[in-house]
Length: 132
Image 1 (cartoon, helix red, strand yellow):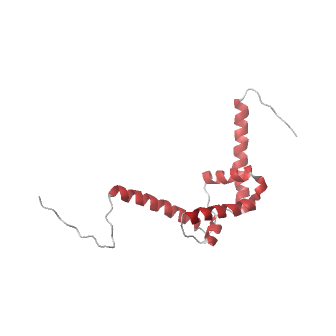
Image 2 (spheres, one colour; image 1 turned 120 degrees about the horizontal axis):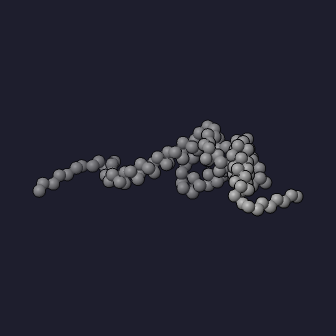
């Protein structure tokens, strides 16, 4: 049996196909994160917007401006802990403004709460109402 040799330059690594797939998937996720935090303005999607709208509706004392500020700090903390470099100004620009958050609450959270309440009333034989 004859063997063969392949010279691999020191600038390259030999990677098994399954490991390459893992690395490619991780690179795609990283690229998606970087794309999201380097946008010049917020570009939410329906499901993600529902999450923010709901978050704003369960803690109204925070206010829309407070939540908009906190979001950037939380993301900055996460990226810093992961040792991912980012531009703070781009990060802030890519996050929802207080007006965006207010719109999310009215578009998603309020409607969803109404629908959940209606669904709960329809499912229960006894409904108790209280007023203040």
